[in-house]
Amino acid sequence: MDKPINEQLKGIRVAILTVSDSCSSGDREDISGQVIRDEVEQLSGEVVKHDVVPDEIPAIKERLSTYSNELKVDLVLTTGGTGFSPRDITPEATLQVLDKEIPGIPEAIRAEGLKKTKRAILSRAVAGIKGRTLIINFPGSSRGVKESLAVIIDIIPHALEMIRGGGH
Image (cartoon, rainbow, N blue to C red):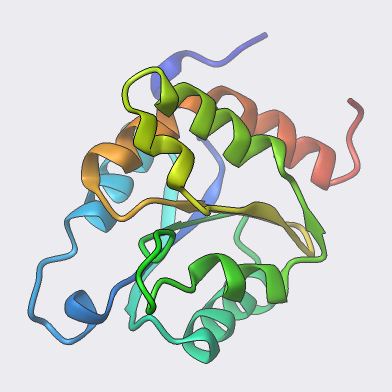
């Protein structure tokens, strides 16, 4: 039986990683990370960790690995660093830690986003599995984060069940 919408993430341990030079230096507030936190908590998920790092591959890889290997969270949601600027390297860092890529998740997010703006096809976000952790890149905008999460929220529990060895 499906969970009520406000309990979609009940029992799911989540880490949030904001990738932003300006947020990590304190020059800008981490609004998109806070939107993720609010959405996860509203859906009864448990935010275990919420960090902000600069657009640096080693820092991103270290946090993603820590979340998966040490904290053993179920889900990592990143925000920022998926665009075209020279410092946007979140997908590259994420791909370096993944055991398996899941192209359908960012494809679905881009397809839904395309209904609102043609710019959605410019997202370079990726998703995949590290160990028993699902990692998904989101854009850096608060609106983009909210819309992206809405597209995939109902498949997350099933994806995590399959990662843990459950059936299809």
